[in-house]
Length: 56
Image (tube, one colour):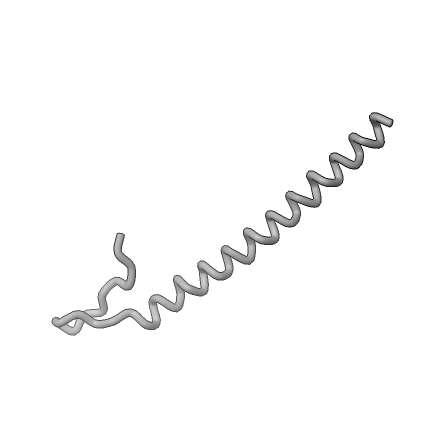
């Protein structure tokens, strides 16, 4: 009974980790797309130079 519970627990942990990693990949792709889009749509300042689109 204990080995069966250990196997089920291991399967649950691996499934959860796999789902979390897949979700993190999608989040990384979305952040990369927004970051690249920021370079395209950044506005020019009063001197005509292209400014940064983020505030850090």
